Image (cartoon, rainbow, N blue to C red; front, side, top):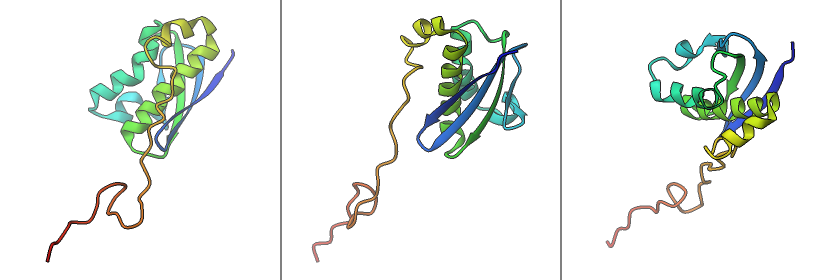
Length: 129
């Protein structure tokens, strides 16, 4: 049985994804998707999106590990990793996933803090006297 590996990234979060033909089970950091994301239904839908688009929800088993960032960024990284693993599994899926914007890595990251500023762009409060 072949295993397909891909890495997904978002902000500072990284998801390592192993995809194998199977029964639709999804294990992330040793937990099921429901245990891992709890009541965040929107994030669960976001993670399942590439599988639903390619109709592979019940056809592949996913094992993943995530690290860095928060749970939202990790969910996005996982979505990106699943997309890349699906393209490795079946190259024709790219034609389905690309128009949905799932292939592109979201490159937005937090801007660094500059000297003399409170945050990246926020200036200290001005005092006239």
